[in-house]
Image (cartoon, rainbow, N blue to C red; front, side, top):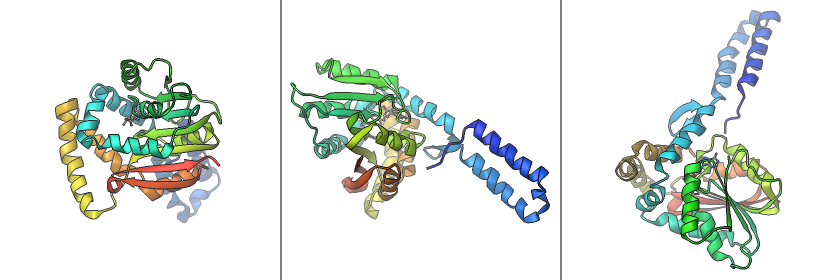
Length: 293
Ligand SMILES: C[S@@+](CC[C@H](N)C(=O)[O-])C[C@H]1O[C@@H](n2cnc3c(N)ncnc32)[C@H](O)[C@@H]1O
């Protein structure tokens, strides 16, 4: 993933390059000139990222993602059921099976949105020892929906709902037994930062579990899935959620997200270990499990 440079960093490097060129006769060597577009291109590149297929400024991406979830929060759960024909429920159940929640555990669900993961975890824990569950999400509209669902289920105190960023978690070092993230990490601007935050907050021996759309492994399924994603999904988005663009973004962001093995490498690079991957529905989604060793 791309490393971020702040505007201040970029300016410093820019002036350093200009200084080298002007005062140290670097310019005198013709060969050195050929590096200029490369250096400047790199600087410019390092401040951009992708919002779906659109190249955008890194600072712009978070607000575009926020807009997506602001616009669809009311219809988010209905859309999940319609577009996946209910299959997202099975994937989430497989995630919780693999997590195997333990009584009294401390769980952090990042990008928890409307609460599907914490509700499932809570349902598997004994009422007397539910442990501590915290949801962190950057979008207050999604959190509001989550809280409403919790109240409707009679869940009042068992889940904490916190507005925060996966890249800068408002959570103490080594404080959680399990970190879950479902269909969120694809949306963050710097995936590597979110992964390093996951490692930071996990206790030694703590579990990382990520459910995300991934890359379809069977070529035939891939063709059908492409047609469905790019033709049917945006149409459903327009009809049901009144937002075609949000679901066009969904299809594009899935294609931009690293495949199973690249994502495994990113997890290992963050310092987490013992990564295991399970493909779901032929790789339409995948679960990545890892541990803070
Ligand atoms: C597709 S929803 C998934 C919601 C829920 N986990 C589920 O599986 O149904 C993605 C969620 O990630 C949140 N999100 C996006 N970027 C985030 C970030 N940088 N930090 C925290 N949450 C983020 C969005 O606000 C949204 O609620």
